[in-house]
Length: 249
Length: 311
Ligand SMILES: Cc1cc2nc3c(=O)[nH]c(=O)nc-3n(C[C@H](O)[C@H](O)[C@H](O)COP(=O)(O)OP(=O)(O)OC[C@H]3O[C@@H](n4cnc5c(N)ncnc54)[C@H](O)[C@@H]3O)c2cc1C
Image (cartoon, rainbow over all chains, first blue to last red; front, top):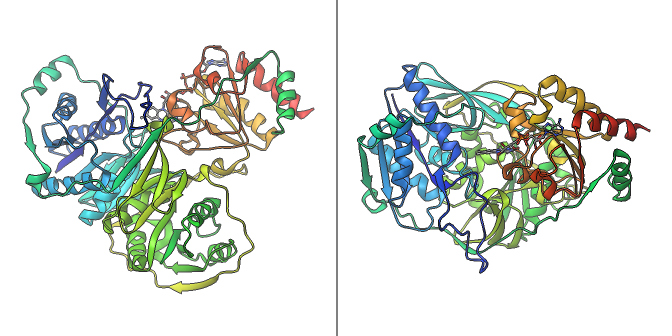
């Protein structure tokens, strides 16, 4: 079985972003970029399934500019076999368009399982996996904390509001990752070198026949109204007095 | 045309998230129906009918809708979609699971986790873990929205909507519910609690977490939350995680115990009315958002606070 893992290049999780003063967006100039952390978890899970003999090939896919090739190389260095870059210079490719592009890639790749991150930490949309499942007519298991491949099926334990839930899906299927699924490996130096020689194919939205035009217009982007630091108190009694004063006890 | 809200429930109780989504939906200015999709969920439909400002409650009751698996639920919503201009779900784990599936089937770009309705086609939503707020306008003919529940008040009760029974969809058999391990607790729900006590990595073990955090939470009739680090380490269950990728809460009082205040944690609690931080490191970023801080060892301060409150 082939596993496809879509990966997104996003602002590194440790960067404190800055909103542009003129309200036109977030300042991404000279900011460290990395693979979306949930996608790293997805790559890791695919690799573990391959190492356990449940999958034969792991293909990473990204949609974005030339720079997304770096993110694909990260996936290859972790251990993926091949990469596909859907190249576009569009400033924003929304989840619906991403899902359509992935569907087109899947038509040729024919994977048995697609593992995605549950959300990208830039737009925080939490949509792509569910949308892809809908477009393909495949079952979905979002927010996975455990994935067990069976005979033509996959059992997925999901993190839900009240605790955990397990679903069994018929393959082919869509899984999206949550934080507890695994801890992604770091790529070793030899593997980073090897990754440079692994195949990375390129295509475009036009070649895939997908209209990736955005549906949403961002009118403005602002900083949230911030909180200011309050006071440090000397004792528990002072704290109790303050909380009583604030009327929250 | 009208707005359809997908109710959040467990077949027995209507979750308050529904009433909060209703507040957001009211701002769209259209008649509102609520869909209760479940199995033996009549009591939920009765509760939904009592929410103020609801036109009709649609009750789809059948085995395929038990546990709200995305595939049959999305099929059901899709079959109703012709009659609605907007489809709204609370941004709970069930809402986030199904709404994008519906949106894609309608060829609509969903607007996720709205925090404000600016106009019926224009919304505010947080991005980058809440470090930026984006105002977006949609050009789609239909709307699919999820609503950040901490950002809206619960709509009032006192309504008396008609309940209309509709057919449950057939199950295409793509997925099957195997089982669930749900936390049982007498405490208030994290998402709607008035007071939350949250513990972090500093607690050091599941036993200590319980021993230190639970008595304070009991004293305050509070829900218990946790940082990702505490959940990852197994001190607290996954559904207690507060943050960018966990639950977003906005209680009257949030007490962060042994939590450093990483961006991702702040994303989930910085809209709380009053924030208290207890941390032995005076430079911890949590103090930048805390109204009141105690720079001290939690293992002495928290029991002392619990005792002081008991008096
Ligand atoms: C993709 C992604 C998503 C994430 N999502 C979330 C999320 O939703 N929610 C979340 O919380 N995190 C999230 N994180 C993790 C986040 O970045 C932090 O790692 C995490 O919040 C840290 O948890 P903590 O504050 O408990 O631990 P630490 O950062 O280790 O802080 C422990 C604190 O305890 C204090 N301390 C230690 N001993 C004592 C003592 N005896 N008394 C008093 N204080 C003491 C220390 O001074 C320190 O400040 C995410 C990370 C990533 C990459």
